[in-house]
Image (cartoon, rainbow, N blue to C red; front, top):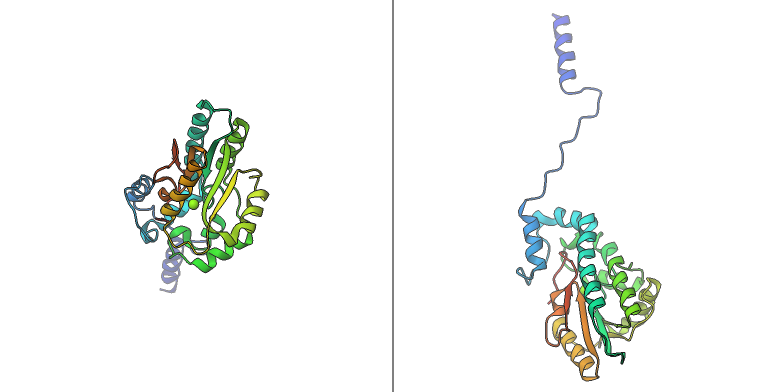
Length: 245
Ligand SMILES: [Mg+2]
């Protein structure tokens, strides 16, 4: 009787892998529609959203930290460079290219990684702390466009909804990351209370009124590139983590 019990016990232990690490079940794949949601976000078909949905949070985190984000960025930048190289410049040095800063020229991924890659509500104070560190890394694809534009004689203009009091840290961050030369760095006046799109549109109008030709305009938000004068061509840099109107 005791022997039979022992045999049953040994058979049960073998069946459950006793003494060995039990293999973990593979992580469930993200819902298949999350890729379609990301495409709709990039195409500006989904607008006004506050956070990445809980069910797509893992998908977005994997996307933004993986190769696909890099490849998508390179495709945009390759198109922008090909377009810039096709231009016939006036020779008067009036052609400019407008760059957004956050998540276009400089990355917020070190910050986003601690805040769910868009799955958590935007927290202004912690984000301002990140900006104040001045440690945001360059987005390498955008830096490649920037360097090619300088070679071609097209002047960069940085137009950001960062505030004027952040000028010093923004300047040093850009310089440290290889953005070493620009025509203008335009920031929001501290008192400015208008939307990003309205602010950027008005600043582009000032550039045009001053005689500049905006040959290109690139940003990770549609609010960077909508609103006349938007520039002769606009380029939407990938960002499925948050939405700024
Ligand atoms: Mg941005």
